[in-house]
Image 1 (cartoon, one colour):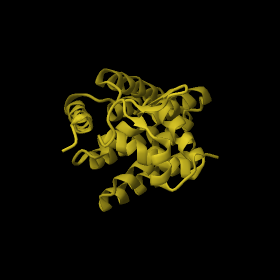
Image 2: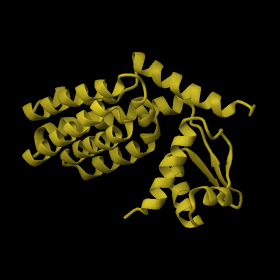
Image 3: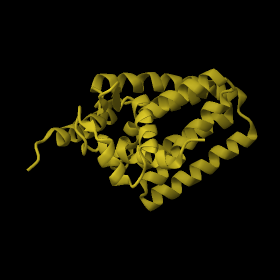
Length: 225
């Protein structure tokens, strides 16, 4: 089981990176961060490893951990692959999903609705993550589910960033409803397209993500006043 302290530190560092508080190439000072978080270096290093796996940190032997801001091209390519993996999960899940899994999806939909009503991005993200993992598992293909989950983890910070765009949570909730309806109907083609459209960054959603990411990286690059 992952260390909860390490996971908490990872989330905070992740937010600092994608919000622009930490600049591209900045060295993560273990001593200062251990003091900031009131922890030993062990959970801190575990957090660095997790961030390295998501592509936000580069670990260099005998030098330490350094912030890495992925380029826009890399980020968009990852979303493109993620959309197709999720579409495949949805197509298979429409044939294989069990009633208990559908009920669990409905519960996560209700949790997402509660988060939208409260305007709480963190609660929405947690329920949204559970929703997607349920779809992966319902595909009945363990290898596919593991690959989808792996890329999902790598895209976590950018999916969080998307949710901060005005009205995106409400749109996402509506899209969840379309996915569930297709799965309940056993319509693989519609489920696949609904998930593909839900995840893909295109049109205004692409522009919003680009603007958010550029704002963050520009803030990080700006000299201190």
